[in-house]
Image (cartoon, rainbow, N blue to C red):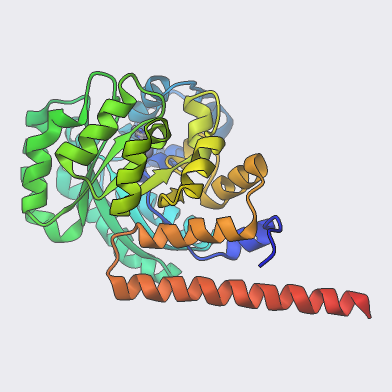
Length: 352
Ligand code: HPA
Ligand code: ZN
């Protein structure tokens, strides 16, 4: 396969998995306005343009300051269903076959929304995503700027619905909220058979120490972002050996820091780390998953081989069973072969 630059069409059709996606981060202004009307919530804006104008941030903290208040429009189970369904439908147009999606129960229960509205609405949408050719599962995230006791209480409240999510994660403001703060709740989740992942956001104070904690103390199965690991060769070797995936989000990176960290992502890919490309909060950062692949390709000049490796990594780093992973990997091989055959026939036709 020549190291040619992948086209937009190639990237859109490439089967891929989305492993770093906050369902609440898919709240497009149109749906936000519709839900505000449906639930009688005053959000202070009445047009899509006005809502978009509020989506201004230049750091993780300023992003979260816009993100959480927007969730006030999510109240009923149907609201969560509509939010998640709209995302799955949109993701299917980007060639997504598998989603392991985050949701933040505490962002809703802290406003008086029952946890079952959140879990049942998201989970029904995840089941119905099969209609769009997507297999989807959920990851319950704890808010790290809430207390460890609140995380534990949330897990206990969610355990009766344990069959409806496959793992737990950790998000929100990382500053002064290291992974070790949540060691007990993650140990309980593990003992309940759940998979573990945690955000290690970009360029945080103590990024490397936090990455060390998630690997050595929490023993996560995956790391969300985690790109700063490139600064520490021993930790890079550890994730490479253990086959631990890093869920990178280039477009999101360029909003919360000064660049998309393309150099770091490509370097980790070259070192054999299971780097993946994802969209994080696409309604806020203006890029769904294919846009993230394309932004990285444009910035770093990645060729088709590397892009195919990224897509394969997204299934290998997923929490699917091995036989399901193998089916997706075979589908990628088939796609690449038929794409090269079509390109070869087009070239042959041009030369006659
Ligand atoms: N980091 C931390 N919290 C978040 C993120 C993120 O990337 N997206 C939504 N909540
Ligand atoms: Zn995230």
